[in-house]
Length: 357
Image (cartoon, rainbow, N blue to C red; front, side, top):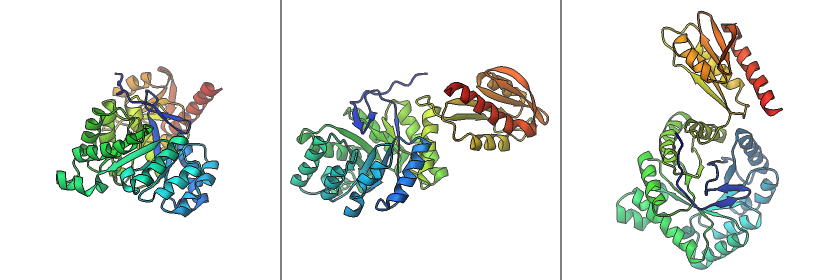
């Protein structure tokens, strides 16, 4: 099945294209103090290694804004400054060479201050993301709708867009996030029917690694399956690297992006005669550095093991303390249970060398 994405206009954040048919981009955000250059750069480099393609940093004061250029010079991916309330921070971030801004024009001051930011961003060809969040909607919209409804979020986004469009600025990306999955989905659906600006999708304050992964997988998975979404962030109360890993798993599960090892393993039952949980966990951990998209199946018995093995790049169908190794859909040989992890890792690394050489 091919997912037909909804058409959106294209913008560029640094060298990364967003919308207009470009691949769905994986983003994250640092949780370091932006004024601490060493800690921030260290975390961004870890995010880069995990596959993050755009990173956002919080700019709380002039001290943080003044560090943008030094941080930017030490990383490979585009940098977005997340700014609220003070237009001077946006102006300084632009002067420091930031690749994108995340602001809400209506909360950074007077019309004159908004115009100054828009003109400078336009002159530098720096896009602006309007980031609507259910937790910080305007008071008049909360009074009108009673609480943060999807309709209120969309009206807020359209209000901020109108400010930018008034100054003939159209280099815009939009997000409409809530911690409520259904509200988030509906807000994006409504907005995408009204405007063609590219959409950054996410479930706000999704939670811990476990609960946040589930909420994000459901919410973002549904949107992506409907063709909605040009960039993605999984917001977790965890190491930001985990956000990137989960984002790629969501995209892989829908066939939208392919990156890294895809482990196909069974939940086990009374038929299983090998320790699938241990083997699959160790293989996944030891192959986490692999970027090439490969399917590895590890099943505890022959009921589904043979079929999955034939469809995978490498696979094991378990038996009593041993298993059949499949390579590219064909039986290769029998291996003992204690050799399975070592064998699979070695075979994958050999396969990758053949692909990349």
